[in-house]
Image (cartoon, rainbow, N blue to C red; front, side, top):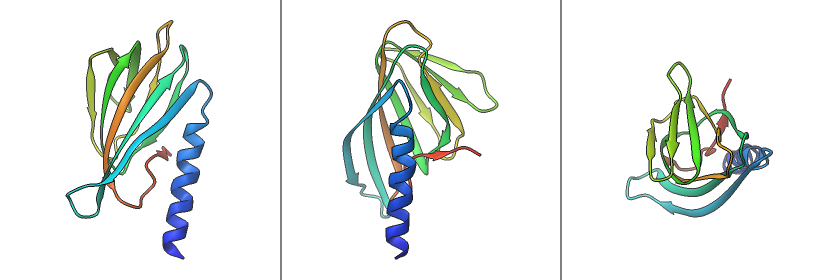
Length: 126
């Protein structure tokens, strides 16, 4: 029953972020890692101008590569990082952060996560 609860929580958390206005998330890959207890998840995130994803964390590291437009990474307690197409950022596990599109055209990125298997991919920050 515990496994079912974890899966439901993961789906609810992910679904909540997938339904953020102006943000579209497309799952591309989910695969067991060679590291026991870890998995690799890859998604494409598209963000309309002026929209973004609220503060959240991940149960593992994230690498975000911008493929289109501009995205702004907003880590708690640090200066914002503006990324244009062709640039990337490394986000350590557990880092509270948000992201938004400060531009006037659509922004898109490929996010690759190296996370603990069975945990929700995205958790809202407290």
